[in-house]
Amino acid sequence: MSATVSHSELSRRHEAAAKRFAEEQWNLGGLAYEMAIRDHFRLDVLQRAAAKVQEADAELSNLARLLELEQSGAAGACSECGALHARGASFCSSCGTPLVENVQL
Image 1: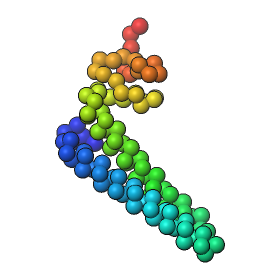
Image 2: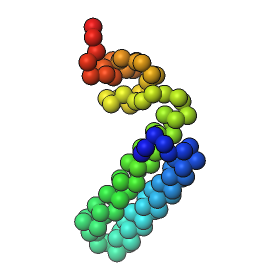
Image 3: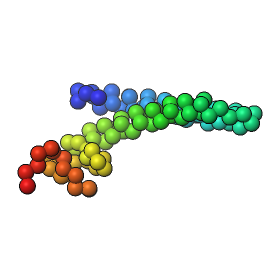
Image 4: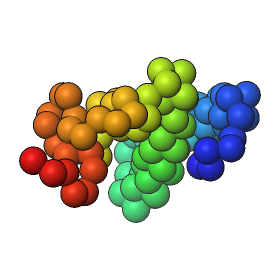
């Protein structure tokens, strides 16, 4: 995601990702139900459907994080714990991880 993406575009992408996630989750549930009533499970088919749900969930989470960063005015998020941090912060206030590579002590 580029820094030039507007808030409305980010919100639109988030809404589309939420819809995709719900549809993929619905499809996975439908597959599991159909297999259950026929007492014939195909693990490979369920795994492919679950992978689609996982992919959609990851995209949705990423977009939600970008929206949160934009709305909070934070400069970024910790690579270890995901906590938001302000501009100029050298260490994560949540877990203590260095936020810049060459921190001088």
